[in-house]
Image (cartoon, rainbow, N blue to C red):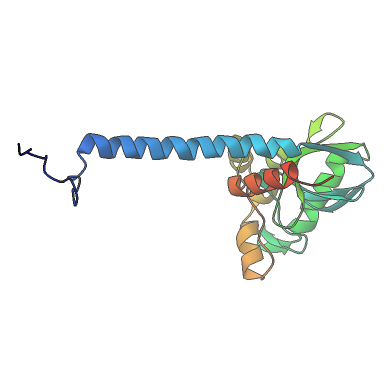
Length: 204
């Protein structure tokens, strides 16, 4: 008795994917990216640090606590040697931004908290002195621009023409680029993942 075997499936090719299948693939991809971003945020916080100690004020948005260099997170102040224009003349806005930070601290102890470093090894910190939020207050006073945070505070300072908003100035990031200085680092989720992995697998 002869048997009829089913035709071979060798060489079978799937037809083109329908629109619903493509939509599903897009949604799945977006969900995976969202999950990675969430994991990055969680892993960043594995490195949460709290620093305090003798303070050295470097410029309008960076300081040193003990041996830890700290960049104030979410703001960008004029560089120390930067000049701005007001009332038809130049003035040392970078030095004045540093003086504003010195006045805000007022010799009080400084406490900074953060969980990520920038590419130059500085801790990105939220800093306070005597309960005063240094990051936020510098933007409110017009001696720093918003740099990933504090947009409403910047808008208020601009409207009131406080600090550098009383005249004209080059954005600190552009000034650094024009003067060939190293740019500042924004929050980088991928960098947070790498920092977290290093922390998890570090041999102690």
